[in-house]
Image (tube, rainbow, N blue to C red; front, side, top):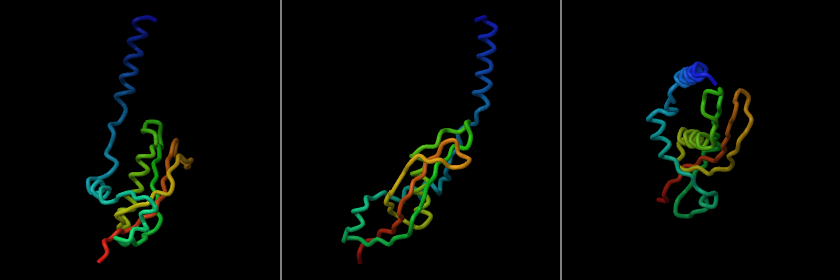
Length: 124
């Protein structure tokens, strides 16, 4: 391989790398604070008798890679989206029911998580 061809390839690689956008923060500071207010619990913990649980309904979280320039969808991102959805409902605990890689229109790769949001309060 000639020096000219190697140099051309290196310049092309540098241009491609330079065109990639810097990763953006997916969540605002307020949303990150909300994420800290929700904890995962196991289903059997709902039978505790030292606290009360108010069910707030099913929530879902999704991670979707829409272009090849984005990072692939991850289970972790879907779990964060699930916690945020629970926090937005006023939940402070979440029971994870399912988390799996799925096919979603418009996504190169995708993860979907489903859970049940609850408000846990001490007994009075």
